[in-house]
Length: 105
Image (cartoon, rainbow, N blue to C red):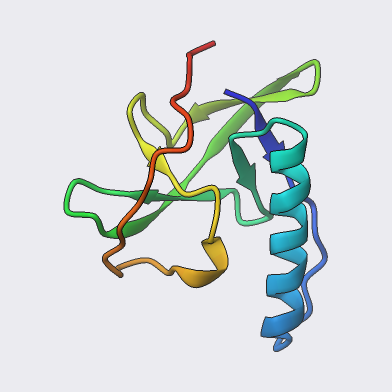
């Protein structure tokens, strides 16, 4: 799975501006083939079995070329939110569509 690390400089209190930065980097990451974009908090938003959004902290490992290894925090079969992240927050119930399944590696 290709994961993009988005190093952004957020501005305290500028929610709209920060969301624009996140969406911009998410779009760039998708265009470059990433399935997940990770932001400075090093967490991912996933959908649990009850369709609720939850935030998962990630532990990253070494770089392999342009890819970053995620050592812990994500598991095979997790449904990671990669689009529309500006519209969700932990705890809400969502409907989702699987865009692509990870192929391991």
